[in-house]
Figure 1 (cartoon, one colour):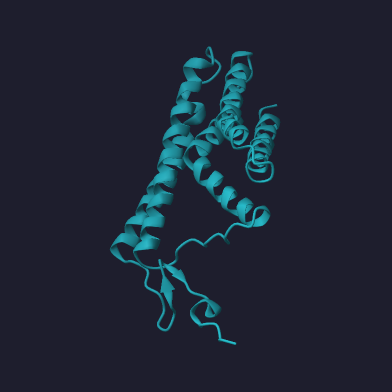
Figure 2 (cartoon, one colour):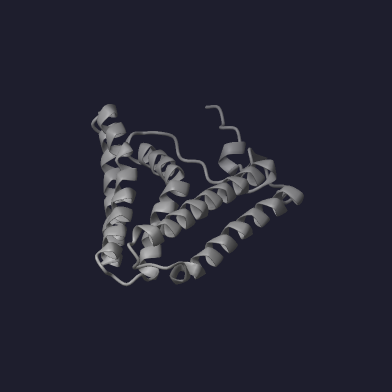
Length: 199
């Protein structure tokens, strides 16, 4: 049942986001869009609450319950950046907005980008492990710390690896190849750097 709830929560999250962006850019209902965006965390909270209820109802604690908690943690850590990504692409696709810029590849901009990723991963892992830990006292005896031990290792390693990668970019910034024009860490396309001919 928990896997079904996770899938339903994932679908619901993207549906709510799509409705929010449609309301903002297609219908010009900014207030409605804001309310819908504020509803995104409610999807995560509902999934976590249902996970707790499932355990309190006598379900045997398993990796699926930890996965539900990790879904909520991921949404906290990466949710805002996903919303911004979707917003930029929706604006470009349906409302005539500028083409979204790719992620920076070189220089200090790439280093900052890697630290942003590392920060989101650390936040996500911290929130996830906190929620997983809380499952034990909230489950009325159905869950034990040992059940979720592997998640502490996996998420801890993921966070450390991301921080190490970002640290490597700080120590050894990635430089652009010779002859490549870079602006703000992004490669400038040929048509962007070649002046348009005057008629």
